[in-house]
Image 1 (spheres, rainbow, N blue to C red):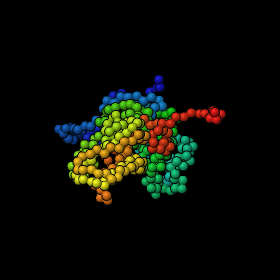
Image 2 (image 1 turned 30 degrees about the vertical axis):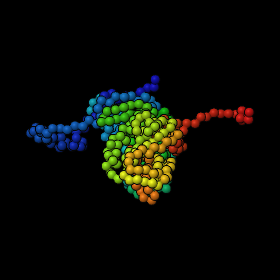
Image 3 (image 1 turned 180 degrees about the vertical axis):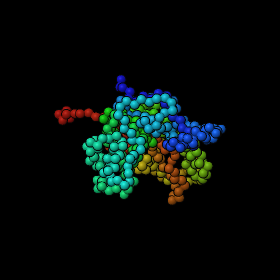
Image 4 (image 1 turned 60 degrees about the vertical axis):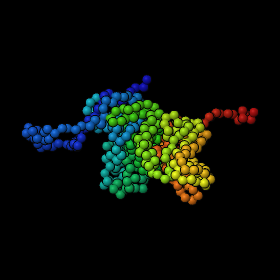
Length: 410
């Protein structure tokens, strides 16, 4: 069995609400003591505390890549700060065995008056890299950040995107045994995000242990083997990345579902009210969990008769790229409520969020045009290339074999 390099037992972290911790001078300590002796400093005032983490226990094995997911305020960043020894737990303990590198805040140690070259050495030193190590990796860091032309320009003249690229490039070239990463892959443009994700994938494949926080579920799916879902400072669920992320996405979508449906139902006139997966879902009405036949139904409330209706349907990915579309012409319907059902032999999409768009026209008059909510969440097992830039949007399993030329001729 692999050795556990991170052990957490009964961790809890409590903060006092409304009070900001600060460093105290001697005069502050004396003033507090005097106030306390006279019953001052808020005597009688009820203190309000918040538990950011409560009773967390888990192990992470050597070489394992673990994801932390959850809503804002769930305690993910607080947990990483405890593991990185940035803050102490209120109760419990955490033991981390090995050299730790932390990407908790991109740009740590950067100074606007220094050049890009000088900031590479400054930031690298603050993050724990020796000068010889920085020199060895300097050209690689600069090439990764794509700032060669501006290397001797003061950082204050860099755009925010250039600063983020350089900061991540320095942090990404650390070589610790354990890497703690907190939402730092959402830097720069889309191409640079892919580049960052590829670098993190290389780190993961090198056998180092990674604990990774992100709100980008595709990143979690790609990098992580196991996931801890935090909610209100506790581990709500833990398990394999694909299954746990799918349940999390479904939960996030369901929170807004009732409100969104009610707004459609109360809108009056001709409206699409709701949509659901009629066949191909085992986890929920808006979750595609099957690689087989799919039926998608769109409920329509029609307050007038139509004779030459045009009904369109389109499917978009999370970047609003059109993936598929079709239309039905000369639709004739009387006033009433209908389910417009589209049957597909399969819908082999990679895991992640997608959006349906449906419309209804009577000749040139638009009756309704709806970007459906909630999104459709695909939770099928990914079977394509491990790198996003080579995986495409389809999730189709391929069979592979090697056949000699002589065998093919027979």
